[in-house]
Every structure is written in structure tokens, then in C-alpha cells.
Length: 194
Length: 194
Image 1 (cartoon, rainbow over the protein chains, first blue to last red):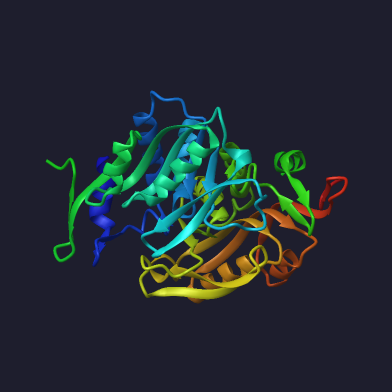
Image 2 (cartoon, each protein chain N blue to C red):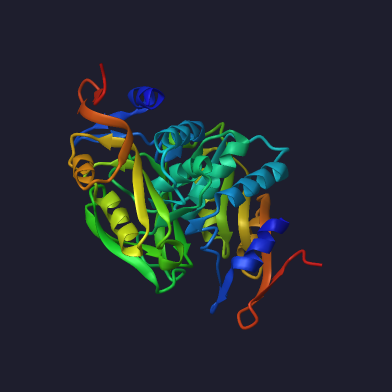
């Protein structure tokens, strides 16, 4: 998706440890017009599949998922990262290892909101080692719903997540796949660059 | 807002301890069409003020804020609840006491995304004791931005938050104000009911 890649090149900041900061438009401040274009593009790529629900994970996936959902005309469910007293006991749960925070946490979805008959599209902002997306896929599997695909805004193609999920047969659409980054020169190579 | 009040009466569940569960359409599963109606209504109520940015707090405020932002044509910034390594050192921060989780946490916003010249509308799903909204207002004040108002989907009118914030001169628009709830009968009285 060219306007996304252009935006990452313009406003993304490459930090030590292969960190790509895109918090000026994607995951802290959010450019809602760009999210609209992202929504259109996911709808175009998944035009051939029926989707009844979008599943994402708090926090930075939620905004994108909600705008994307307008193009599919479906509700969004977000997996929560800890058990709160507002969630009833009846939940699907799995463990996820966080790369960003360096810890393991539980993610949960209420059984009321995911189940057999649902055709689920996963949406998230980033894919790196794939742990969060694998966790979401596990929740879908446990619920008896059908996983129709996963839409990712930025995939770090040099980390294992994308290859892993594709090898498991998950239909994965990433709008920008970063092949490599150079911190000193602040340059990015995308997978399908000429 | 009548369709919101109707929906709360239809799908909300009243639990012990004055808990109103609306997680089937507002803050776990999210009805994006309803969010669109909420966005239109906030735009109508704040039609007379200039807004350059919407500020909310993770996690359940984000989806609503993003849909609402489409009607104001502005970006959204969400305050984060803990310091992560993807946030630079330069942040505004304040402490918030959580009613739901029973603990105190830090909320932060990067100084890059809030500052003098911004006219900020706060958006959140719930207002009870007002601690989260007061925290967001404090971040706006610290940044030198102007706080033009706060839009809340559901206010618990029997808790202190609404009165407190209005007495501080904050222009507060709540789309549904719950005056009282009866757990046994599962009935709700809204402030402006006939």
C-alpha cells in the first residue's frame, strides 16, 4: 500500500534494536483519515471472503479495527490483556508473550462474543514475532469460530511472525512489509520495493 | 440520546455494586454503527467549538474516539496507562486511581502530540468517579493546550464525577446519564426520563 509506505518513510523513526516508531500516526497519535484508507484496502484484499466479526487486541489495534469494521459492516471484539471485574467468568483465554513489554500476559475474550458461526478477521497494527496474532488465532479456534484471515498494517518481515503464521495456513495480508531498516541512515527497505 | 438509552435498557446488565455491564455493544464487543450515531451526536453538541484533537485513554475509549474523530476531522491521541519502551522519555504524566481495577496507575502522553495551540475534546466511554477524565484534563493543562470539552457515552449520575467536573467549569456532554439502577428488577432510570 503505497501511501502507507510513503507515510512510514516520512514519519517513522528507526530506533536501536530494530524498533520502528510510528506513534505519530498509527499507535499513539492516530491519523483517522489514513485509517480510512487502510480500511478500504483491507476490504479490497478480503473482498472474496465473508466476515461476520473483527477481532483485535488492546490497545493499539482497537482504533484501526473500528475504522476497518465500517468497511465490512461488522462489530469489533477486542481481546483484553488482564481479567477485570467487569468481565464475567466465562471467557476464552490464552497466554501471550509480549516483545514490547518483555513479559507474559493472559488475553481473554468473553464467550458471549465469539463462537461457532462467526467468520473472524483478525486486525492488528504490528506483526513481529507473531505472538499476539497467534494468541488471537488460538481464541478463535477455541471458540469454534472460523478464522478467515488476518490483516496487519505493518509487518516486520525480518522477524519470524509472518513466515510462521503463513506456514500455519493463515491468510495474512500485511499492508507494508519492512524487509530491513538502517538506523544510522534512517532508511527502510520494503519487501516489494523495486 | 434516545437510541443509546434504548440500547442500554435492552442490552445492559445491572450487576451487584452498581456495575452496569454494556460489554455487548460498548466496551468489549463494539457496535460500530452505534458508534457512528454517537459520533454524529457529539458533533451536534459540540458544533459551536473548534476542535483540533481528540484525547482519550486506553483501552475502551479508543474505538469510540476514533469513530467520533471522523465527524470532527481531527486526529486522536490516546493516553497510555504504563510506560513502554516504545514511548520516548518526553511525556506528560499524571496518576489516576482506577475504580474498576482498584489500583493507582500512571497515564502518559508524548509531548510531541499535545501542546499549546491544540483545542482538545476528551472522549471516553464511562464517567463514574471522574478520576480518568480528571487525569486527562490534567495532561491537557500541563501541555498548554486548551480543553474545549468532554464527551462521555454513559455517565453514572449517582457517582461524584459528573458534578465534580462540571463544578470545575469543564463543559461536559454525557449522552446517557444513569440516575439509578435496580439490580433485582433490572431497571434503569435516566436523568431526563419523563
